[in-house]
Length: 81
Image 1 (cartoon, one colour):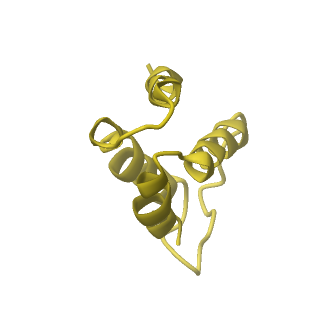
Image 2: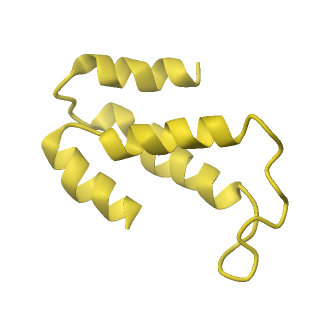
């Protein structure tokens, strides 16, 4: 669902509020150790599925997306520089 929102709605609108919110949430949640068995039974456990999504769908594609507000692109770059 998040992948669809990012690719179809946020990219079309050139604004990424849900993606920014997800990055902020994960930033706050990872201030403490992530349980190794997070999500066990319903999907691959741990933080890896979230990290893979962020890397592959957000950061590796940010340079190919258009941004209504150029500062939003810069804030993604500086988040993890």
